[in-house]
Length: 138
Image 1 (cartoon, rainbow, N blue to C red):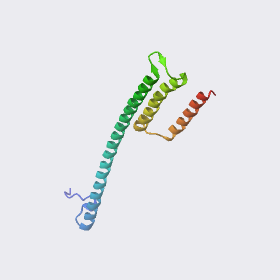
Image 2 (image 1 turned 90 degrees about the vertical axis):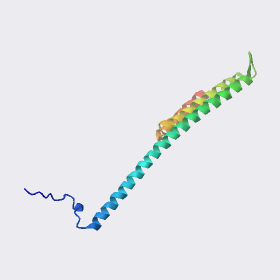
Image 3 (image 1 turned 45 degrees about the vertical axis):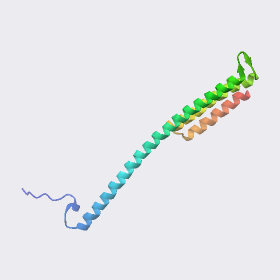
């Protein structure tokens, strides 16, 4: 029984040193490319994390800002049992900041955590049309 096992890969033989060197260079370039790809993947994850935090902080700031605006408007118009504005204005004054808080916050959170898609624009347009028809009385 022979003790010598032939090499499976012809590049393992030391007959042609230039071919072996080219292979090592290609493997090194491949390792560099994989390292860059891994680095880019880590940066992308970090950017997603930052964007989500920016969306959360922006949403909280919108909620606080609109709540302050609502409080200010209510104290300017309502003074004890007296109301110094028309009923339509008082309802709009309360509904507008609440609607603003809701829409802006939902849009920020959907964009940050789920990402917007093309079908979202269509559903948003349908919702706007339905809301407009309700307010027109149609």
